[in-house]
Image (cartoon, helix red, strand yellow):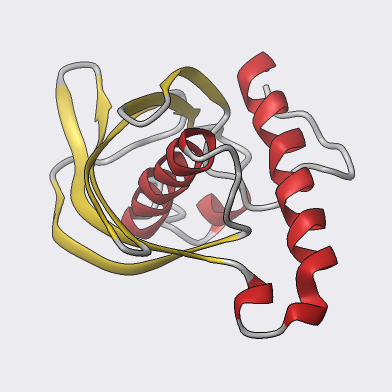
Amino acid sequence: MKKTTDTCMRFRQLDRILEIVPGEKIRAIKQVQGNEDYLRDHFPLFKVMPGVLMLEALFQASCWLIRSSEEFRHSLLVLKEARNVKFADFMTPGQTLEVTAEILKQEGNLVTIKAAGTKGEIVGCAARLIIERSNLSDTDPNLAALDEYMRESMRNELKLLQTE
């Protein structure tokens, strides 16, 4: 299901974006494959997607929502806080994690997101995420070209996620 190209994020935890409503919400999926590298160690006799990677999938979906909502205005999106994180179920090879995220609040350079990852009707992971937006050029104007490079790379990555 995953394509490997030079422009792809190497540690992408989403396979496809199903829907984005800019300024509101996103839906995306992650199909847990049996050959994913982390499954060799987590755990060899009971292979499951680590909770931290489920949380990362929520964060990545949230970032795509923010980027598309503001037309890629910021090159950096950093997870400042993960609140009320709940892990409720395992994700094993062959299962699909459906990630949903919605914007709750935007204040200054911070965005608060409510996100969840489900398999069918069962919640596997849920959290409120506080994400900080910025640009490298905010602290060093000489990095404006790098900001633009990062924005363009993310635009290309989003196109891939919406077509796979």
